[in-house]
Structure formats: structure tokens, C-alpha cells
Image 1 (cartoon, each protein chain N blue to C red):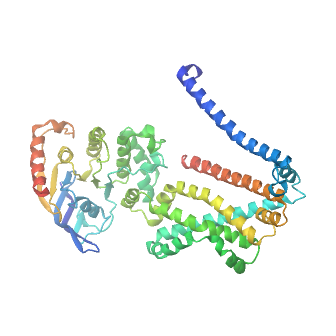
Image 2: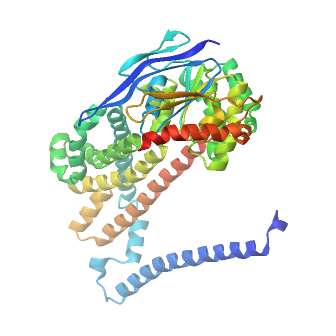
Image 3: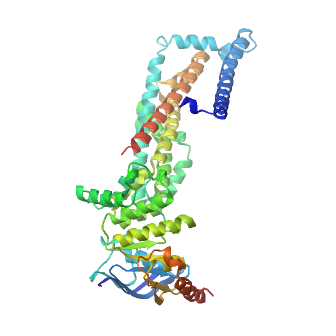
Length: 256
Length: 268
């Protein structure tokens, strides 16, 4: 498999009135095509900043980012980004929300619209295309938000705490739904989360960041050895709690 | 459907209806009672109808609309208010957009807006008259002066408070600033805009009347001042009542516009 994303020597310094703050220090990692990678770390370690930098929303101070071997600066068409909240536009119906990204990129065509409609059909949202976001449940809204991102056919999807705004039960269900969609569409994912079990249940690898200035402390390979793995069925495996303890300890040392 | 209504539901609906009737009854009672009391006290000469006027005389004045040129005065005031309202709203929203676009400009102009906002605009009356002449333009400028700054501040405030995450979402699709403005900031602030319309229609009327007090030869404000000077209190009272009705109608028109906007908004 090819390395689809490479992050090299990324550092980020914030300039404030009080002085400089080094938020991220020399982060290096890469992701292979089709992989699901999570980043966890103590709060304030700059994990969301790292994601913003990769997405191009924020400037980096030093370092380089390569996607499919090409260096990128700024926001790339090959990256999709999903925020904590679904950010659906309340005044647009579901179809119109779904194609919002295409509209912004001036890529509305018969094909692209059909592609969006097909995704909606595939993931049980087609009956709702004339409804408004306020008429949908939290889980459905999050699925619409995901499909909105997928319509522009990104190579990598960045998830920024994408499920933490949901209540626990919905969250488990939505995680499962979204995971299945991502696997079916063969999307490479980089997810930032503060939830250790969420990271373990979804990822192939977990990157652990140190506290500020964030740098990579360790990379854990997660393997349950089961086919058709889902975020729910791997929670039942004995390895799950083993991974959990390892990661918990690794984060815990830094909290002190 | 009718068979599905349960007893409790019927009872509930009945209670709501009764409540509505009671409220309407007292609203009318207060109005009619007030007018009747006024009329009776004036007839019994307990109050001086020369100073206080009286409902029947107001009604007579109202009936003689044409001989008093009332229609003309109403039209003049309405015209001035609508023009002032439109200019104040459009210009205000336009300036708010410019200030949203450039955070430099909005920071530079912030203290000026704050001062202008708290300054009683009527104080500018004499200046306006000297600059644009004593006539209808001065009245319209007064109406604009009163509504403009509030429109700018209210809309700018709304624009700046637009959900940051939604703007971020649009940016991840490489949205330009213009797209963010037209596809997110403006549609997200339709509510703010309608609110400023509601405030503005009232403010424009205030501006027009105070303008008419100062300079005009026509309009309800002129009638009120004229009536006061010649002690025709019937005329003053009639004008005030018509002004009230006019304000109500204009506000109603804005409410209608609000309905139309919300309807078209949810039918894309």
C-alpha cells in the first residue's frame, strides 16, 4: 500500500501578546491508503491544531505535508474535514445541504448530484432529502454531514472529535454507522479524539501525543484479528481492555 | 379526524378559546370604556373639550378628511417614512457588510459608531436643515439618521456572531469570502435582518415626525404642530390617532414580509 499522507517535521508556534507558545513540536508520521489512524493525547496537547494544519485551515510554522507524494500548502481538494458538530445549514433541505461542498467548489453537475443522491440512498437518507436538518435525529445529521464531505471525493478524511457532541448511546451507534460507511467507501481516515475507547474501537493505529508542546510519544498498532471488524464487536474482545490500559497509562503519566 | 378528538382535548381547546375571548373582551372594554368616559366627561364639561378634545369631535374631524387635506398629509408622512426606511435599511445593511468584510474598518469605526449610536439624532436637526434645506429631503435625512446606525450595529453584530464552526466547515471546502458572505452569513442572519426591519419602521416614523416638527409644510407631524399652535386640539388628537394606526399598518406590513421571507426560505 502507498503512503497517502506524510507529515514531516511539523511544528507550530503561536504568537501571543505574552510571548510565543510552542504548541506542536516536530511531529512526523505517515498514513497508508485505506488506513484508519487516530490521534489521542492529553487535553491541550495540540491534537486539533495538528489536524487543522493538515487540513490547511491553519498555517504551520515549520515542516511539510505530502499527499500522494505531492507537497501541499493550504486547503487541498484531496482532504475532507469533519467537525465536532454537523454544521448543517438549517435553512437548506437535506439534499441541498449534501451538495453544499460541491456548490462551493462550483462542481455541481448531473453526475456529481447523482453521486450525492446515490450516497444518500445507500445510507438510508434518501427519504429525507426534502426535509430540513431540524427534522432529523443527531445521528442522521452526522451521517448527512459525512456524506456532504464525501460528495467531493476526498482521498483522506479528517475527523475532529466528530462524535463528541452526541450523547453516549447515539455516539456508539453513529460511530458504527460512520465506520461502516468509511470502510465501504474505502476512505483513509485520520481522527482526533480524546476518547481512548473510541480510538481503539475504530483505528488500525493510534498515535499518542505528549502534552504541550505536542510531539509523538508512541504509535500503537491495533489488531483484533477479526474479519468484518466493527467498532461494536471489537469492544467485546479481551485485547480491547489490554489496549485501553496501555493507552490509559501512557496518557496518564503526562497528566501529572 | 373529528372522531379522533378526545374529551380531554376538547376541554383543552375550549379553555384556549375562552381565554382568547376574555382577553379580547377586556381589550375592547378598555378602549370603548376609555372613549366613553372621555366623551361623557367632556359632555358634562368636567373636562374642557377645548383643551382635551373629545371622541365625537375627533370623529367629525376624521370624517371631514378631504376638507382638512388629511389624506394628503397622511400620504406625505407615509411616503417620507417608507423612503427613509428603505434608505436607512439598505444603506445600513450595506455598511454592515463592508464592516464585516474588513475587520480593520470595523475596528477603526467602532468608537464612532458607538458615539453616533448614543447621540440623540434629533440634535442634528438644525445641521441637517442647513445642509439639505428645509423641506422633504431634510425630513428623509432625519429618518435615515435615526435608523441607520442602529441598523449597522445590529446587523454587524449578527454577522460577527455567525456560527464559527459553520464558517470553518465552508472553509474546508475552500469557500471564498464572498461565498461565505452570500451562502452562510447572510442567510444565517435573516432573523437579525427582519428584526432590524421591525425596529427601523418605528424609528423611521420617529425621524419623519420629528423632522416634520422642525421643517415641514405637510405631513402628520406638521398637522400636530400646526394644530397645537392654533389650539385646534381636535386636529392634534386626530393626527395622533391616525399616526398610531399608520404605525400599526406599517408594522403589519413588515410582519407580512417576514412571513413571505420565511416561506420562500424553506422551499428551495
